[in-house]
Length: 193
Image (cartoon, rainbow, N blue to C red; front, side, top):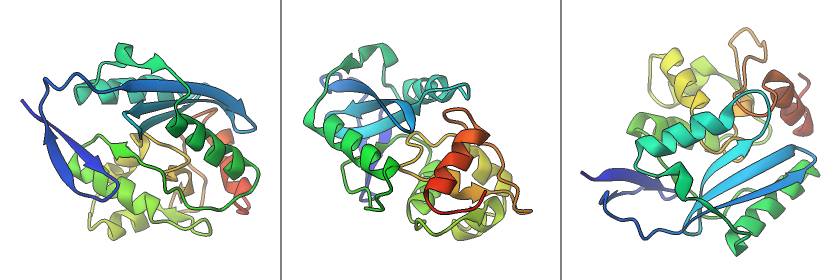
């Protein structure tokens, strides 16, 4: 049966499950943010794992597997796309505020995709609550929105770290070393958490 993929332009296409000729690559590097693994389908970024104790990589691989992508099929290769994303992340860690304009593809439910698109629309100067994010995507369920935020396949680039609890407490973060990594990213962007 077909699986759904959603590209940056918010259009979807049905991809037959027999389509196995895709080039699946990964690229691992270290920068001041930590050790990062990037995952690509052809030239589109489909996943980012900021290694640490939060278990982001395992959740990402399980999520991709649910959408018909074999985690064992990724082969390490420093493609031009991988090097471009590495450079963007390195620049971000050095204080750059350039928008991410490189190709990416998201695998998730339509609701998850809507939440991730709303996250991506946040400016560097915006930190909002889960309830506010729920309002922006037209949902009454801020917990469902929180679950979608927690399944974000491309943290940092899709800035789930900019979502905090309604009482202003920083809340959890599912990448790197959890809350400490979230605090580091927010401070890097000029927020006092």
